[in-house]
Length: 118
Image (tube, rainbow, N blue to C red; front, side):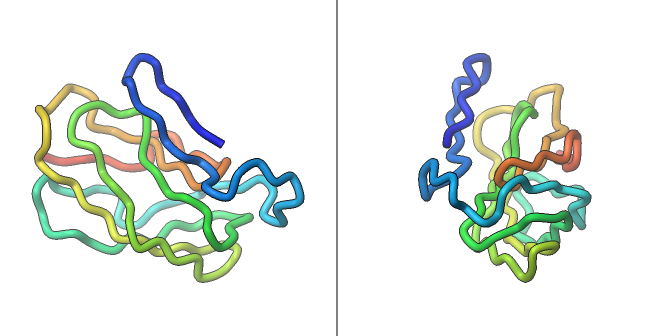
């Protein structure tokens, strides 16, 4: 499964395992991310994401913002309700006006859940 943004010219992989409808994870929800802010060019840091329906292999992505994009790596599903990941915000490209990003975990989205600070 892919998320294609024509306006931002990006493609995010939502499900690297394909479209297997027997996936036991079903629909995920995202309730919070902590911390909910990060600094451009700062040291990579660990976030905790809470919600429901999390299964191993679920991707974590940031979307809907503009400018310096946070990137999640080392994603570990601790339980069906908790994920930890490392977030990096590289100073690549140029700053834009919309520094607030949605947090996506599989099919679940926390709108305006993460803010990038200059």
